[in-house]
Image (cartoon, rainbow, N blue to C red; front, side):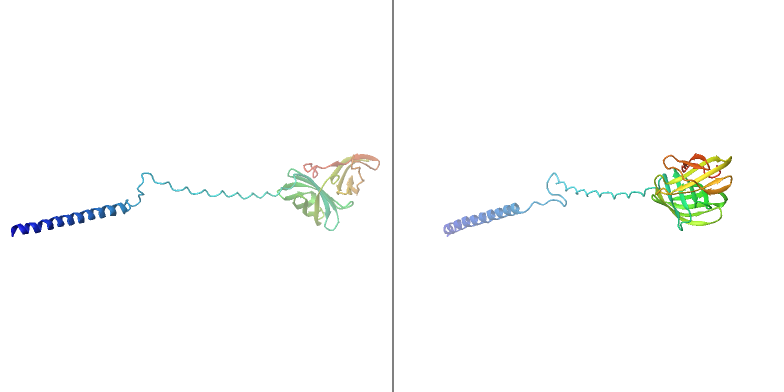
Length: 237
């Protein structure tokens, strides 16, 4: 009986050992496969690489083109001649500007006459004369617009355009028949001459002068009309 039991248990023990070995081997292979298939785990914020890939630099925004600076308006001419009429055509007016100084002559050829002198400050012209005469105007690159007042208190609006020779203010100081004589002319762009000659305090129409030479003749006496610069003294001189 004991030998038979040994013969029976021997094969069974061998079979059990084989089964146990197979189970252990299968379990080991399964564990290895699971570890091989699993992705490696890294701490938060780490890619597992020793050197982090640098982030792309932000592209520079295009530099905006600066807005063009508006050109400043051209200042009134520093050396210029303006000539024109009062609004009703009562008198002729001519003026010369030179670096902030101005001189003007207003005349109707007989009675109305005024010599004026002053300054141009920015776009404002302010001139004064004898016995309350005066002028205020706005100067632009092409004209002077304003009002002029005579020594008799007559105030007249005027406009005088930027002009070229022979336009301008002309003057002559001489002696005729032993009397101090002053002659003034306001000349328009078309060459029209309007002036008054004051001989010993008496007024009369001024004689015409030659635009090329400035020469004239009055009561048998010859003289020369000189162009007036804005800085010349025409009041009180």
